Length: 156
Image (cartoon, rainbow, N blue to C red; front, side, top):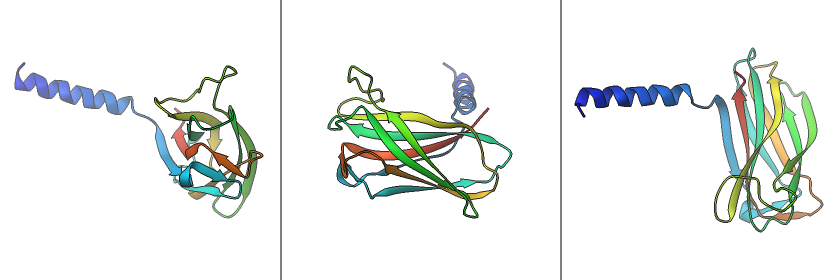
């Protein structure tokens, strides 16, 4: 294969991957201390928003191991806008199907589950939005959750 053809092929692959890339503007995970999520522990994400004309999809992501005893996870979600206005919500994340098979991606004992939290969200103000997640299960200590995350992506 000629050098010229290799360069053209490489450039084409880079352009293709860039065009097909995610529309993600924020994607971050935070670890849960020793895989035990205390009921009083709140995981906080600071999401910078500059484009107030764009709509976004919000995802909540969870990494759990096979020690997690439940098929779902209830979360208390709080979103605080710049300026202080706050929205609070409860969200159920299904982690396993009725037969007990984990729904997340991954192999071995760790699964990553991504779930759409809200579609076509409009952020009315630019600045940092604070998204807080707190486990809402009945246990004071929830074992088997290793990380939680938030992803914000543009709607195209």
